[in-house]
Length: 170
Image: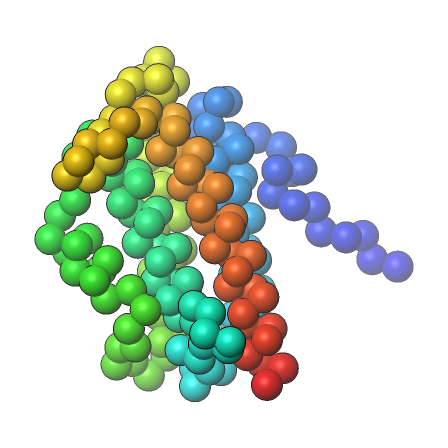
């Protein structure tokens, strides 16, 4: 009998990540592992299907990457760039690629790597600093944004996994 694989949070601290930000890193790494496992052989022709009108697997993959990028940008107290706005406008829209599932997974993996680098560079003393969200500068904090990035990633991961199963079951 094989030993079940431990979830990321059960494997201990992630090197270089401040202690208070470990849960964020754990959630992002867990999402990366689960997405890779679930979508490695996912059929590209099913990427944009919307069973019962729910968001497609492709939308969730784009959205996971885009939101992570945007929330971490706000945590740095920076405005969104034009490429980030363009990504947002393209979320949910098919694009030309011979390997769209792998392309979207790779983009998400790259975004997680960037997020981990930012977490490593985040001074815990700044976690309660004000951060405005968007043009309206809705109130949040560095920690609020980073925590929401982790929570949001997990929420959409769950939705994606269910949608993928439904679509694959046909």
